[in-house]
Image (cartoon, rainbow, N blue to C red; front, side, top):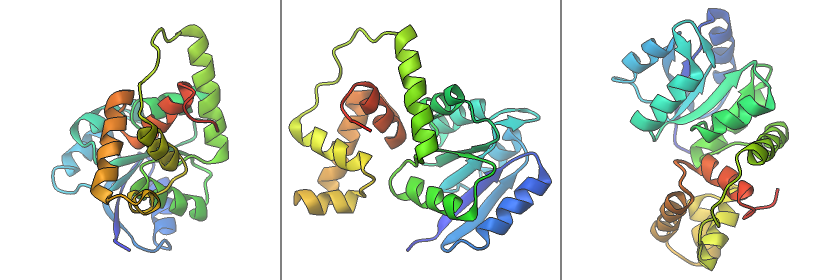
Length: 217
């Protein structure tokens, strides 16, 4: 298994030290970036680009919302896991909508942290039951105040099939094997789905598909 490069952004030194201790016991990960603020993060990104970034929402010179939007635009290949004390349903769903790939509370343990890192790196998103429930609630509440007047994306039967496998956390290689297609073909379907659904990443794709009624959770 390839080494996953990790970035960590939090303005509390003791918390960063605690996360570093947890990461030290996780196989196949390497901490390549550590920052205490958003501005420091973007300076360091010029020299060190992680695969997965653990990002706090509350920082002295800004917040994780602004950083997430900027990261999605300037570094779309970085997978973002929000690591915060904020557990409000709307906050969780909103962060996923604007570009986060996973959301963890700061009381998470080593096992879940390791699983989340692996999932977002390989599949592009991580939902645990608590977070999935919060996102669904947020989407339902949002749909009541902001109705969608469109008729939804027009997906082919094959695209729907690939979408279902993606939502079940199968990798590109696994989907290709199940459908007897090449990995390149599956990646093509994945890109088409992102384009048709109007989202930037796999996490957004699954969320939009749930909202449009294309997936059942």
